[in-house]
Image (tube, rainbow, N blue to C red; front, side):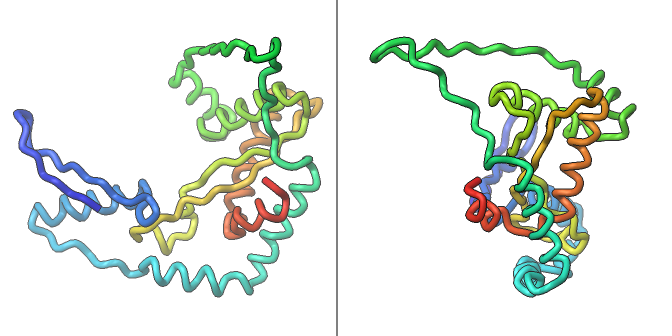
Length: 212
């Protein structure tokens, strides 16, 4: 890591550079809060549960019923898709000539999207995840999509105040069926919630087993 205090016309700024392998975004918030407490004359509290404790628990957890259930959960999800969804490459228009790249952008009213998500009882993140799943489905011309997203990996309350890299990659499957838009969005939100519940099963092992 590197820390440098810089004096500017607007005040003193702290420039921080941490190796992401050992510190995630939530850890930066923990560090910042402890630094502010120290600068205000309060002694920061030490970790009650450190990263080494977490690693040991993860190793022991592989022998638990919960780990086996998570492995089975993802195994069942993978039976509904044909591997990872991959958007096809552009078709070449001629020998040595690549297809033209185009970009389309549509501004999103975040306030309206957030309010719409609230009426469905889901998070804005789940709403956009459903939109991503729909888009991939159309590009791949299949109703069954398998893609990956991330969670902060802190569903275990023990690590709520622990500095470390807890972000998990999790596999998601979405399915376009003959349902309403709202039901599809809710189904995607439920898929994400269930995947997070079972995120103790490593994505690396899932990827190796199903070529994701």
